[in-house]
Length: 260
Ligand code: MN
Ligand code: MN
Image (cartoon, rainbow, N blue to C red; front, side):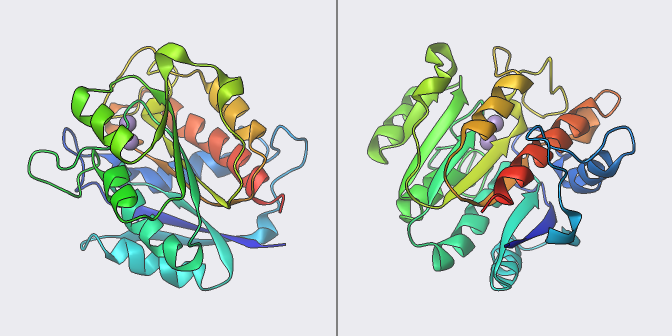
């Protein structure tokens, strides 16, 4: 079975509002291994830690170091799960994935479509990664779920790049498509309602429940070749509850990644 490399990206320079996600990776890992819960996913099988190769956390000073580090890990014939970091890290990660997976589908769970051409003068802001991914042709298909902040600019961008936006206001989990290509799952924790996941920089009420996100993950049929969990901001959290949400999602995602 394919090994899964875990890499933490201590980077929040792409954050437009508050810093903090750079502190997230060790706290998500701590919650993941915490003795308060076992390592079983809901499919009943415990996560096989022998298949995990945790490379630890990377202090990122140059944005494209994220691409080089990811590429190095992908070259070890592994799938990669990244603990973020703000959402800007997904562009350099996908840039690395493109060399190995020229046809890659992406499922993004998020309150925001992150399709700004530029945000406050920054083209590598966490508001922009999916514009960069799509204009470079790095994704065959981009499906977004949980969106509830679509403004005219981003609606135009979504149309231009043929992004499939499943807005929260019209949510129907059964309409999330089946994927044909290898799949990359990008989980921005602010896609989840802030009542479940308060430890994020941008509180956007009216979001997905933890259970709905688990259901979305469990319904995935494609081979998940990579994933990230981003935007956890420990400075905004209460009793580390969002770290435990991230760790729970990490278990369910790993269980899926280990399947193939
Ligand atoms: Mn995002
Ligand atoms: Mn977001």
